[in-house]
Length: 182
Length: 182
Image (cartoon, each protein chain N blue to C red):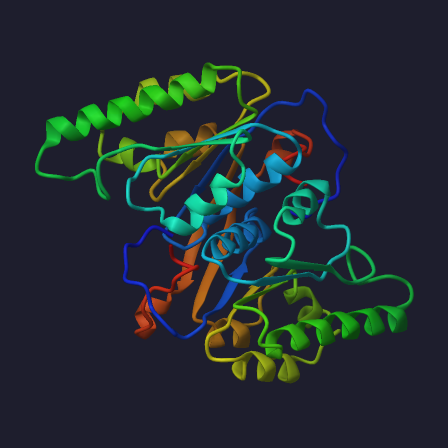
């Protein structure tokens, strides 16, 4: 993200996707939020997978109260609990929140962290979701993270980075690290 | 970065590399810095390419004064100016700063942003650099970003993510966006 370029006033907000099996998707979204806040943008960060964030992020986000609205939605880690109906309701509530944020006019950036899983597990209707993204307000940046982004979402997006795992510490027998993984 | 895992006390610090031609390398490093700070870590963030960061990052980093030491090193964007000797001296000074930070004992995380270019352009000796990384203090996390990471660096690293460009807005005729690109 180091291209030198002129500021675009009233520019088109981008639909951005960080996908792939590697580390760095959510982390890049956090970085984008920080960069946006540094420019005076207001950011809405919706976390769709409960338990995927830990104290590190929450403490950091807390410092930006009033600039970043941070919502933890969802019931559990995988959205594959033994109560499918409850999961669906939680997914629907989280998605309603996202849609509301996108059309609220309050934000310059809305981040849907780990959202792709809701489409993969068909917790949110694909056509409805793509419809919302295609109709997002002109100047709004929407950032979506998660593995296995749908091809239709990739096609629609302005910027897509696949975070590809080349080497992962767990495979070398190193356990998760505080301050890195969570 | 959403694996649930136990906290590792006194764990091995990781050598992490974000490489590839896609967006998100520096942004992920910023996100890691934020996460680390949220855990009370002290972070040293060294930017090797002058001009690659803009006001957004600097404003944000400024809020973490005392927790994140942020150094802008280097002379210009490409390290390929018309004065090679001056470039070499600037590269050497930046690398000295990095080495000092790594062995200072002051930090739990040292981030060398866009460092790979210094190896690619042979501004820093490869064997010397790899030697420093292999001897880094036990608990220290070192994060290196930039395109074209050397194979030897990838082999040595604990975690490597390749940010692969799938879709880029410039290719669609969209200009750089404030708060996103810079």
